[in-house]
Amino acid sequence: MQTVNRIDPLRDAVAALRADGAVALVPTMGALHEGHLTLVRAARRQAAHVVVSIFVNPRQFGPNEDLAAYPRQLAADSALLEAEGVSLLWAPEASAMYPAGYATNISVSGVSEGLCGANRPGHFDGVATVVCKLFNQVRPDLALFGEKDWQQLAVIRRMARDLDLVRPHVDRILGVPTVREADGLAMSSRNAYLTPAEREAAAALPRAMRAAIAAIAGGAAVEAALAGLEQALLGAGFASVDYAQLCDADSLAPLASRGTAPARLLVAARIGKARLIDNMAA
Ligand SMILES: Nc1ncnc2c1ncn2[C@@H]1O[C@H](COP(=O)(O)OP(=O)(O)OP(=O)(O)O)[C@@H](O)[C@H]1O
Ligand SMILES: CC(C)(CO)[C@@H](O)C(=O)[O-]
Ligand code: BAL
Image 1: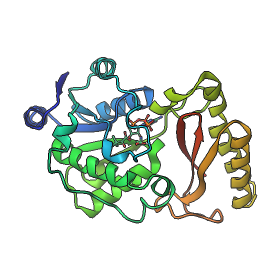
Image 2 (image 1 turned 90 degrees about the horizontal axis):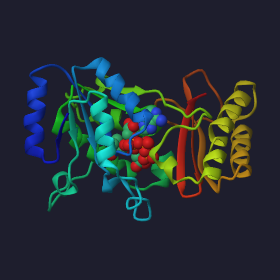
Image 3 (image 1 turned 90 degrees about the vertical axis):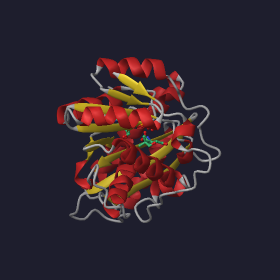
Image 4 (image 1 turned 180 degrees about the vertical axis):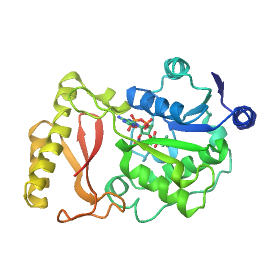
């Protein structure tokens, strides 16, 4: 596995890979876990070469968020990726991604506005901007993202469609189902912020979501089921619930009742130093 951290060697390395077969990109912020490695394995099944990026993107963190605390462990991540047969690790320095004078922002309206977009102003601009740059830098045949970040995936697909991106084409932006711990908690780098007691309590999140989904399927009013979910989380030790919403799975428009179109339950809630997100088909 080759590792590069500047644009020029990246372009040369990617050109050499592309001459040999299809290239898949897996963008990450590092602190890799089985969720990331599942994306890498899915990528390997789809393409001759996998490029993984590791970049803790400052533009997607708010001023009071955890940019400084976000776990950074490049050597350990690199060893994991090497063992998975990754061809190229793109680990840019911030100055390579945003050189002096950098002034361009990509903002996707609509799908990025509610849910995490409402709680984290500017977050999805930062995500869309860096992902667009990663797509232009690597020009992959396909790119893979986790469904754990369901809204992020919707924002990225909207951007690719709206900007007529060719590499990857919007149809080649693939979502991979959320990988969970044995107790159901979605794997996330931010789970590392939890104390053992908080980590145990955090399993209430997927449990309460499954209960709310079952209640709605059983005929309960959506509003009552979501209120019950919030109470269950607060009772289990969560400090607050940023949102708990039933949405149209594609447009992410909030749903007051369960119709026939695919729906998704999306939740963000805070426990200890972590803000956890999860989503499930509903
Ligand atoms: N449990 C998971 N299952 C599937 N994909 C995941 C999982 N966790 C992260 N991913 C995906 O891995 C990619 C990189 O995510 P990122 O590096 O932010 O990791 P993370 O664990 O989601 O971290 P964070 O704590 O910042 O949310 C994203 O496409 C994300 O959706
Ligand atoms: C897609 C991404 C790598 C952009 O920084 C990040 O938001 C993430 O890890 O989900
Ligand atoms: N995986 C989402 C990245 C973020 O929360 O900034």
